[in-house]
Length: 279
Image (cartoon, rainbow, N blue to C red; front, side, top):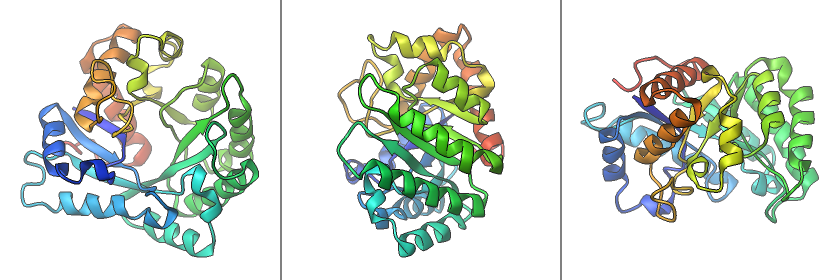
């Protein structure tokens, strides 16, 4: 069994075939999916929970559909939208049993969005809420090309505001170098790889993955984006996480079954969910 640890199931690109897409995931060996709740706007962060409940409550749930979990958080570009009402909404969502993580949150200096200082302040406020609810975090971090600015600022924030909680989290769609991976592991984070690790020009990223112990890994799709080879350019979906897992298996010199078992164990350990999530 595989777990897709990061998919945007609330995307409008799934409006016409969301259930069929989830059935394809089950048929591909995906037993669970973490639906990411960030929405197009901060106030839309609850949509992932709605989808989670819709399909977990389906008459045939567990018979042809993966188990769904949800997260909630404010994406870095929407950090300017954070106010007391948004933080209260986030706190309420993190109190729901299906919402097992806060995210994706973090810093993005690559695209135009909220100012860096606003992103940093918003991240700290969300860390406070997540800590209060004892939820691990899902981190998005993207620096400018050729820079480490976002990573440097991120680790400064995490050292001061997150390490003391001992709650850990996930470095989502990891794209850094070995130093960033090493520091993430040392902070108690799992390092998650998406479909871009399968691309021909991603050898530096595969070189980083090769150094990460099996108990430090997760796999994800970041669907509907970053479809793995050979489906690059198409709408991504959770069933294709198996292609990323296969690339990681080849990179680490282990079997696909070992990657599936390890990443499932890592997911259940971090989020405190049952090891039988896909049964």
